[in-house]
Amino acid sequence: MDGHLSTNVNNLAYLSSNQLTKLYLHGHRTVIMNQKQAHWNYQVRAPFRKVMAWDALFFVLGIGVGAGIGAFLATL
Image (cartoon, rainbow, N blue to C red; front, top):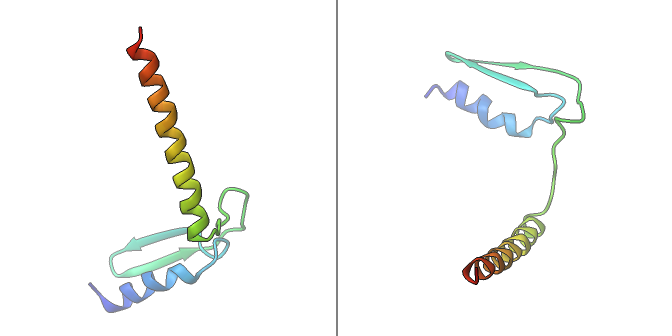
């Protein structure tokens, strides 16, 4: 891979959403188009632990609901 292209792609992670909306990779050139930030393209930032806590909570709730539905269907 071309070093210049990979450097550009790695640096894209540091751009904010209003600086970067569309990325076109064409050959060995990277073109960045700027656009005003709207309600659908903002970046959500959350700590990893909080995300995993909510994930675990809903995973356990899903297991409980699934087991309840399975037990109900087994009695029919």
